[in-house]
Image (tube, rainbow, N blue to C red; front, side, top):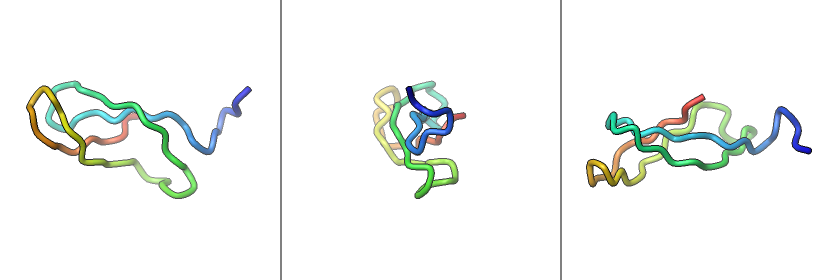
Length: 55
């Protein structure tokens, strides 16, 4: 079984465009202790926008 404090937890990335579109990815807590921000494609607004980690 996985530990509760996994080194690579699954995180949800929610679009900052306000569309509600999400990506799911894994992140390494040791390398990225802060909230993750990635620029990815949002098909609802049809452009690349920032996606922020949601907890």
